[in-house]
Image 1 (tube, rainbow over the protein chains, first blue to last red):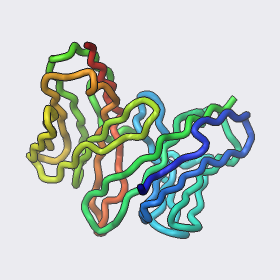
Image 2: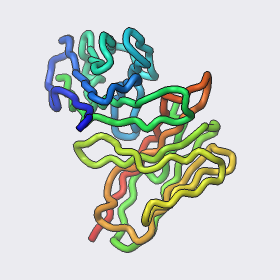
Image 3: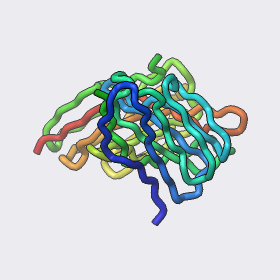
Length: 115
Length: 114
């Protein structure tokens, strides 16, 4: 079955370290998204991509970067982890453009703690 | 700036009770989606409403999109413990032939006690 996976599921790191969170989907979806979820804030968009080599900044992109070298993967990199980046991170994908609404399919999340 | 305000933020009720969750905005959305999220998992889509005034029913759940497409509500009849979870509304704006981004509300954490 097609799916979207994230790894690792849990990560503890230290302030200043570089961290990369993986996201892999097997639906062949063009659109991929990274969100962070914090209590009281719902899901906030970090970066998104509408296809290979396309990346865009979201609402809370400072301190994060993404790259899209193939359809299946959108890794999220924290260049120099900060305690404010302690959060649960979700990757999502959706299948096509040109329609007024798209269902987004979410991965299981990565809980990141920055000490 | 939170474009979508959900209320209440927390709701704890007894099994069998009815409840309504609200999602409000000052902005117009092309469509509005409701997701449910369980602990340790990602959100899962429940429904999408597109037309102003639209009402959709999913078993004991009733979803309504406001006439002006700025607000939505989720009503659960005879709540069950299995309804426990975080309910998120998400709005999409249609522009340039696409509405691929979603703006999420802050969520309503529902607990249904047996």
